[in-house]
Length: 182
Image 1 (cartoon, rainbow, N blue to C red):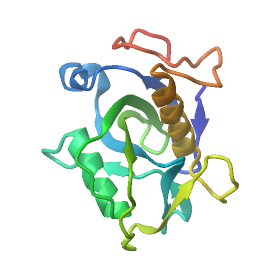
Image 2 (cartoon, helix red, strand yellow):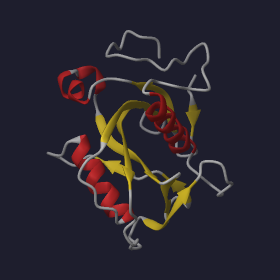
Image 3 (cartoon, one colour):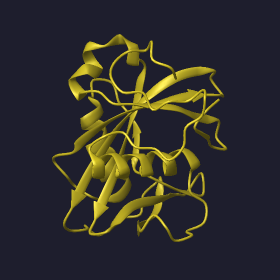
């Protein structure tokens, strides 16, 4: 059983809290394929409208060869939203089961509060960006991204892993052990 599934075949299995340096030192979290970022501006959160999937998403993407998860998310944020940043806060990992490829992958999760918005340049992937209050109906929003966004916001506010949903097969595991129930 999964926490949430989207229409593209991605299933959110669990969140993992660990130190960022532990990603490289621990082979339990491979492959680390991408990075996502939740960006806060005042009391709203930045999302982008993906022109191909025709849905709202949080910024992020695939880690390129030779790139760290942190470098990836800084690059992806600029490519997708035109926002240039230098620093981000590591939140943890999302464990995803890709139903199309029938394999597990991990995504690094980051957070950043910004005090200004750079003008958006429409690009090959994102048609527009929006600042969202997490409440208003905005149409189609990727289900996995929406859950990840809420998790990052709640975790950032409390400093600990928070969730409103669990099931007998899903926990929001903390620490570094793959032996923990997923």
